Image 1 (tube, helix red, strand yellow):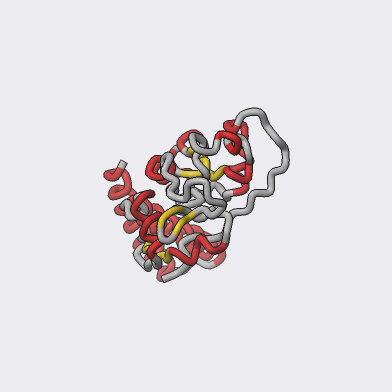
Image 2 (cartoon, rainbow, N blue to C red; image 1 turned 90 degrees about the horizontal axis):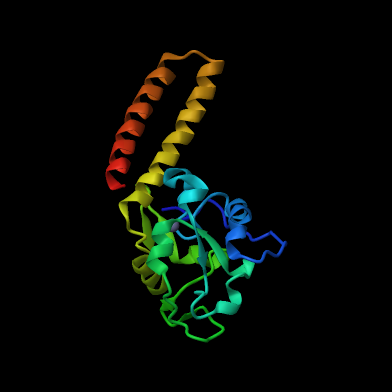
Length: 193
Ligand SMILES: [Zn+2]
């Protein structure tokens, strides 16, 4: 088991815009092209076009925060759709009450509630984690497949660099095995779309 996310995003953008939609590019940069909740990289979902801007505190209940950059999260459509307007904390300054509610993905404490299994799947570690996991559908197969595709992409890159420097048959065999596994996973991934 490892941390669910590769790094904790940080909102660094300071310019103010009149529409929250204008924040998509800076959000994408600040969130390293990844969904704040599930960590999926956006290139498996048509990049910036396919990703959403989530209002952490929902805009229906908190219209005054709808253009507040500190309330925005770069999100895949699956997590954003699952969360919707759900906000169990009501008007409380806390973002969760007991075991129900959410944690801002820019806080390091978000990662205390989840882990990543060796097969790429996300596991909730706490009751609050279970609440978020269920609402956001973090058990969707695509999250696990995207994580594994990324690991294989990293391996292929490393092998490619090693092969350039050193023509080695063992490495060539490893490269062929990784490519086969990668193509198979891609097939499974396409079946989930
Ligand atoms: Zn997501």
